Length: 385
Image (cartoon, rainbow, N blue to C red; front, side, top):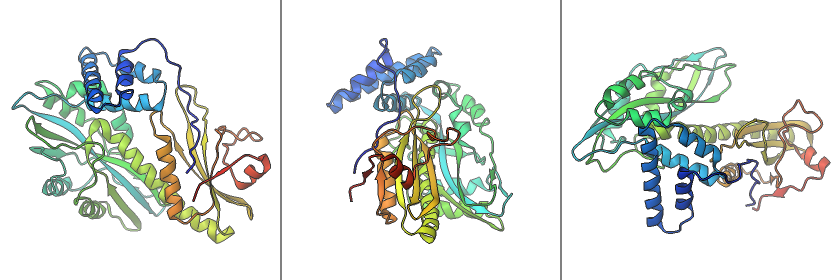
């Protein structure tokens, strides 16, 4: 398939930065062993900065990254660096989170509670299936936390909290800060909500298996969905809680947001396609990358619209922010792949970066339709079938 242009704008290479130098050295070598050496040095450098209380170094390096690969690689290693180094025979606690993508709908004005009534049943199920790897023991709070609570934890603060003799006490205090966030069903329309169960696991230096990014959901996923659905059930409300694999706290928010966005697009596409096909026949799907009006940092947004030349009023739209380290070709492929599965034959990628606002109506965000492409004569790139 064709690819979208990147709407993000990164700064030119500036003054030397030790964190970025190590990041670039890792990215520029084709030797896996050499890359591992550079990555180990990068992780060690980050830990040393955080031990000295220097949390700004990472922020400054990320702001100076010159492209998505640099940004993503540095951030991934920074998240890895929050995991503590254990001496032989040492046992230490680590915070983790279980992302829950909750699809819910029902009577307008209803709420789902912000806590589970029986989190012990969740702990038992995960323990039965060894979902936390070689953790000697673990506990989970019953609060259903929003992503903001996890994002508020600085990586440097997390790294310091998980290290040293007082780690258990520090983590207990930090865990208390993750508060319940009830789910507002609004008008009752089915929608996606992201929540997390936060816990602490005790791991020894001899442990060979611990949760990590990229892990697939295990055999615990289906029974956990049923268990959570029973605990969250209410009359006149439909709830489907989809659990993603548990992850170290530093990685969980990003993984949960990605999963929620994917499921959100699937929910949008299914409903929008039914409406479009019922009113105007087969729609045209337009996938475009837009530059947004944010004042600072790389900014962009993916926008997908469904429209038809036979119904000028039809414009079903879905948007997704493009983060500074996101893999844009992968995001595009995921969207296009699902549309293809839904048998949308007419799929168009716009080969130019689009503005945030409509040129003729600056108060409106630009949502491209078939009429816009035809009127502007814009060269649209059909996706190869």
